[in-house]
Image (cartoon, rainbow, N blue to C red; front, side):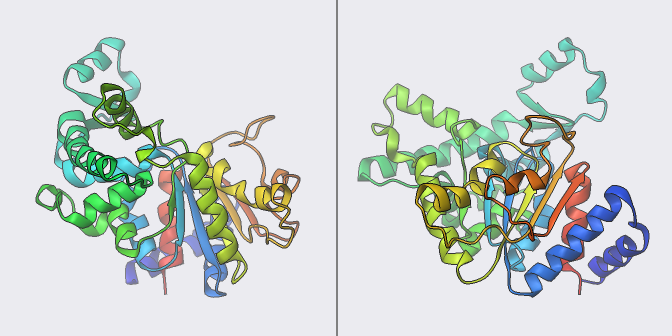
Amino acid sequence: MEHANSIKAFIRHHFRHFNAAALTDAAEGYTTFINNGGKMFLAMAGAMSSAELGLSLAEMIRAGKIHAISCTGANLEEDIYNLVAHDYYVRIPNYRDLTPEDEHDLLERHLNRVTDTCIPEEEAIRRIEDALLDEWTAADKAGERYFPHEFLYRILRSGRLEKDYQIDPANSWMLAAAEKNLPIFVPGWEDSTSGNIFTSHVMRGDIKNVHTVRTGIEYMMALAEWYPAEAMQQPVGFFQIGGGIAGDFPICVVPMLRQDLEQHDIPLWSYFCQISDSTTSYGSYSGAVPNEKITWEKLDITTPKFIIESDATIVVPLIWAYVLAD
């Protein structure tokens, strides 16, 4: 806590203008929102788990500062890859200088590169595949169906992977989420390594029912149940890292409820902050300014709105340290 207080004091003293001031305003707005009884929904795109955002996200979850998450299938699984195979990851500081031949050499070493970080395929992906396949086939035979994150929760809670942990479990955001049974929504899960693996086992005939893993439409239905239950009791905010489906899918639940289901008393999102390095542009979701969301009935005129045009791997831990202070 003393460390977080020091960071908060540093931010308040030095971050006074431009993107720095937007960071300070967003962090202070987040703190005020939570302290006034609001709940915060996190939308997480990009390769944040491979960037080890769990170092701060796990603490935010445990501290009750994040109450639900929408993320890509990659972020869901890559936190667990890091949990069980951290020692085998390879960092490539000069990734900008790599030739096609250098990239092929990484492929030959079974290293899948994400910017400056290489995920070790054999030690990470295949280890998780065995555990997942056991859960998928057991559910398939029993005629049971679960969401992608629920299968991972089952693996983590079983203790099966504990012998393979290579980081402090306190730094895994998926473990923190499993402990709290945090609601997670994973749109487009099939566009992930685990989703590809599941597809291959269905095509091989190892899994008979493709619906053993519940779908994106069902995730939207679950979100459409979760949001009103929460938002009718207290304000719900939206904290967005990056753009794409991880952000657009969940924020759309409000106009869907209000316009398509004609539940006009559903509150709009009550806080909004997006961290993105996407340049403000025409036709871009990631580059759209927050006010554009007013026209889609996602945000209100009075909703506190913040956009920080910067690298989320730098900005987000600073904001969360600020929120965790005091």
